[in-house]
Length: 469
Image 1 (cartoon, rainbow, N blue to C red):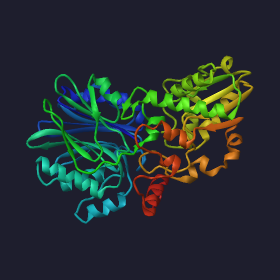
Image 2 (spheres, rainbow, N blue to C red):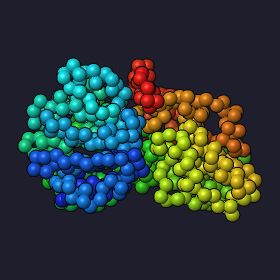
Image 3 (cartoon, rainbow, N blue to C red):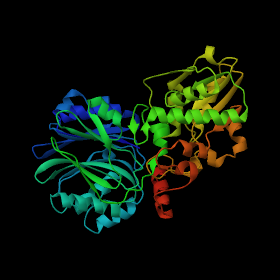
């Protein structure tokens, strides 16, 4: 899972891109990069770290131009090294590209490219996408772009939303395309001066004062130039299966996606969870969210149950998101810095602790220990998503079933494993009932909209473990 921004027609595009990337920092904390195009030359700077650490005013000043692409990285393929940081650039033809997603057939693509004398230099899966695109771009017209994206759709398997800068028909052009399943998000918008922007989430456009026009259509390619209407070409029949985990955890609550504001989606999930909790007949005194993702759902659950909603933790605002940290040791250490319980809210109470999901189980177990330390009467865990029992191969870091606690531990042992008095997950049926648009729920229901072969699974798991497949 990563975040990208593309801008064209904006003075000091690098500075605007850096601002937009800060709005997407929740999507990746490992590394970031910005590339610009100015007078026919490409300028790129990227490094490990967060946006404000990597991009000072001097660095931004070294990236001239009115067109730019930026990226924040959360690695699900390759290692957390500078050479795998996006965007990537190829000189012949000139293409600058970044993406959000996960390619499942990287070894196959590398073999296909090698047979054409092209070598992949990084472990980042946007590089083979870019090279397949560049190999198919046999001219500088619109039809050539369409042919190149068709080649990507034909050759590249997995989930991906991409943004690129190229010279098309003699003009710098922002290009965006999204695989036919639309698993990973992407939006586009413009400002009053005719500049265009594309991004992973609408909050990046909000930060720039751009108006969001709509989503990057699955199975299509978009060409955007300053002062010109957007050109959208449908290349494949769309089969949208948008990632439900974006709605549950990754996206910012103020982002707006195809099914509406993320805040409202999480509110609806919390209301449904409250109804399912009430059917179990368990009594409680207070509903407490685990900051920050679960706040809307916890508020809705409290309202549904007629219970008080209280903030039971103080969050260190300078800590990162624990789920997207690269290993268990870092996630555990970060949690100790991230949250501190408020005894007056929790002591002697029957507490419903609301969280968004349980993946590996280590974080929720530590949370329960924190709450127990201030002597509540009972601790009940309520999760506004179903148990994660299946790996994700489309861009979220849970590629191996043996990492998933709900797949390893019998349901009867969940409460004891997590150190709580009871556990209530939202049912798969409850989750489906809240989905306004078709969704990928493979991590919950095991139904994978994009086929992944056994060899591809082995390669993905081996990559995350740092061994050869």
